Image (cartoon, rainbow, N blue to C red):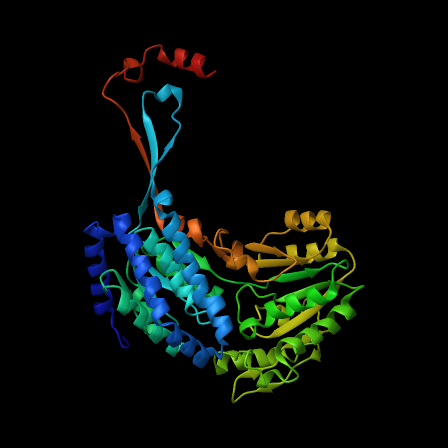
Length: 461
């Protein structure tokens, strides 16, 4: 669908609005049937999905299945199981002064929504929001990332095999398609990506007063207390950091390590990297590549920061950067000024936990925070003193894979949440309804008021 101009985009949105007005998407059976159809198509296209992810990002099949395909099918299964209870109108209490009356809240779909996806988890991060949008009863237009053309084509194929375009459609292309889509009025825009583009999306949405969900990122800290099993800690940090070659929005961006164990932890991280990817990760079938030359060159400049104690090897032709650990880092270093989004791990140290907390408090709020500690009091201290989209204690990444946990950022790392019920809520409007009988019709509320104010004050005073 390349080279689409504003007119076809506008026509597609109008077609979806017309279909939405038929009321068909309001029916729960229709929603459930469509989600089941999507699940079947994903199963049928699994080999093509895995191949596309391998071609675009060199993702190993295990990671692609675990972090892309399975997370989407889990969202579908969870939504299908719980949709009827989510969509059921709910009664709420009515104050005695307003009786007799009945008050209910009823979730209703928003209408036609736009989902703009990134390139790092390009299958999961376009289809998981779609699951939520369809569960809530919406029509949807999807914009996959043009930086992963093979995955973009597979997403388009999955959608075309499953849905009619007046219900769900994919628009492939670059900036021109994105601009044409953002010029349209949608009922909600769901964007996953970087902060700079998130601001552009929000500005465009403001022209139509369109609500937005922004899933951004940030520099997610990883605090390591002295009282931890160092081998397990090192392996979990290395896995979370170098998964997808570090191109994960919730990857540990930097380490804040108790100085007493810093040397031991760095040694164990080096051991863990060898265990995960062998002596030469360039030859590992389980290690990814940087998405394009622009990002590769950006990351290479960050290698000039500090002292490389592990890795640092690059291959421009294959866009390969080895798993790298940097020491002798300061808070003013270039690698600490932006989200790294690559396989580079800066290490800083602290003496007292209060130092680490204070440094984190001065930074923009991150999408994730990681803490390795056996100390329950220290865990609570960090949880209460820091703000982040989500937290994992004694592990990395896993908080984003729990369907029952809302996922989203706070402050600079985003706004709004999804996954499970939170996704249904994001793509729904909760309509408030009051129903009253015609009788009795008490005269007290009507003019003339006379001395009614005195009585009112006595009742509520």
